[in-house]
Amino acid sequence: MQTIETSNKKSKLKSLDTLFIKTYGCAMNVYDSSRMSDLMQQAYGLRIVDEPRDADVILMNTCSIRDGAENKVYSELGRYKLLKDKRPDLIIGVGGCVGQQEGERIQKRAPYVDIVFGPQTYHRLPEMVKEIRRNRVRLTEIDMPEIEKFDHLPKPKVEGLTGYVTIMEGCDKFCTFCIVPYTRGAEISRPPEDILEECRQLIDAGAKDISLLGQNVNAYRAEDADGNAVDFAGLLHLVGSLEGMQRLRFSTSHPMEMTTELCEAFAEIPALMPYLHLPVQSGSNAILKAMHRGHTREDYIRIIEELRLHCPDIALSSDFIVGFPGETEEDFEQTMDLVRHVHFDSAFSFKYSPRPGTPAAKAEDDVPEAIKSERLLRLQALLKEQSRLGMARQVGKTTEVLVEGKGKREGDLTGRTPDFRIVHFQGNPRLIGHILPVNITQAYDLSLRGELVIED
Ligand code: 5AD
Ligand code: SF4
Image (cartoon, rainbow, N blue to C red; front, side, top):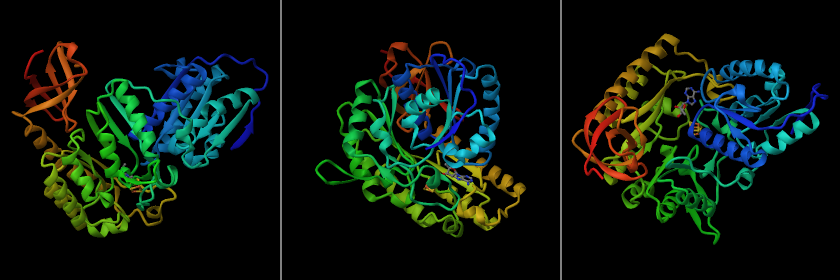
């Protein structure tokens, strides 16, 4: 831990009452933020507020996966500085992947930041806050202790009907464009018993749809208390057979570790929902190789065929990068061709941007910006067309919807289908929390409309 003295030594300490957390990035960060808030509520009784100006402690949980992340953080910090100028006791912390990556540089550039921490050290937040209040110092805490984090977190709280459980952290794949292995560290899996316990607590607290999280969940590998090896498919069977487990999902997985057992799990585990996010990044073998993805386009297509054999209606989602160094028009056409061949229900697509410290950043970023933009537009148009078609195909189907809450329109409820589509329909708010059959009558770009098959 790095400690810097500050000059604000004399003023009297105000009590800490409120916390504001700004979250960027992936589901892992959303999960981490909720754990940070649990921790700070437990340690200091802090109340969450919606506006930074109402907070005694402001935490930013940052993401560095794509371009511009650091700048966004610094510009947001600029706004917080104005608050701190007025209230010098305000505590400002920067955590997450930018915290990990930038470390002490943050406090050099923004000396009003009190704490810098990484994704593996936020469990020490209460201690750090105590330290900076007692000794009036600034702290940087970015070592990567071996997953001690999970032993120090309070029990998770459930909000609403969905729950999240981190089952593993980090990534050993080292795709050449990606910063994650450097910010989140090596792959580490939590013991199955801890995961089962956390899922049980979520179920007891009312969660009906639970997602297992990790950068690479299918790299999960651990031992149970009896010393038996448990892989990801094994874990899914354990979690899927918990009493009261209604809907189970996971994110994110890597094509390299999509085992046959994992494909079969979609047919064998009733709670496992027919939805999979499986990033492919590119459809060109030359680019996949340069990205160090460890699989070819043929491997990817084979996996999808195997998945569809076991779960014909599975909804597929993916990530794509266009304009990776060296990507030719033919390479890009290979990506378009793969998309046409596979058919995705939803997708995220990005222009390549070099991330400092990654191997790809050493190569020349040689695809001109205008070509990147043009390829992105073409790819997104195709993906949008496929997603629309996927939505249109739902019309006429009757599907089980988990009713999550009231919709925006008068008398509307909103819920999710097993394959994660949003459905709006008329119904009594009493139905919230139930899983009910809904007949789909209309499809829009991002949601469906339907009618309850049996009205209470
Ligand atoms: N440039 C563009 N996109 C990236 N991603 C990760 N790193 C980069 C980068 N350097 C995308 C990948 C990944 C998703 C989370 O972000 O598609 O799957
Ligand atoms: Fe990044 Fe590749 Fe690991 Fe995914 S698998 S987190 S893209 S290095």
